[in-house]
Length: 121
Image 1: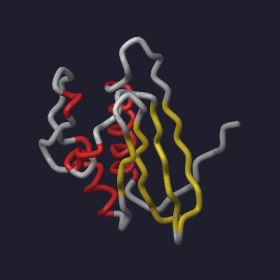
Image 2 (image 1 turned 180 degrees about the vertical axis):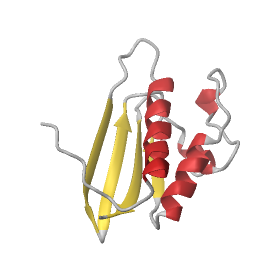
Image 3 (image 1 turned 90 degrees about the horizontal axis):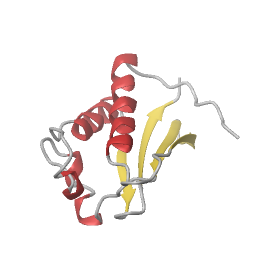
């Protein structure tokens, strides 16, 4: 059953860009031959919410989890996929500007889940 996402406090344009970047990566880095699946959820967390954006894509090696949030750094699996390495660095800047945190949990061929926190409205 689908649950509505909560209302958060923040800059609407920046939050739109946050979701667009994460969702476009989920689709762009889908596994060949697999139908892309993306699930977005949120749960209460401190004074706000913990969001999770989970996909069934190619995944990211654990050694690259921190690196992918640095500008112009791309994951190893992205070598054949166009991109600049700016999207996730932008996501990190947006979340941190909203006094939240962002991190990833992923394994190659097992999909990826991006987590981030945002303040409640």
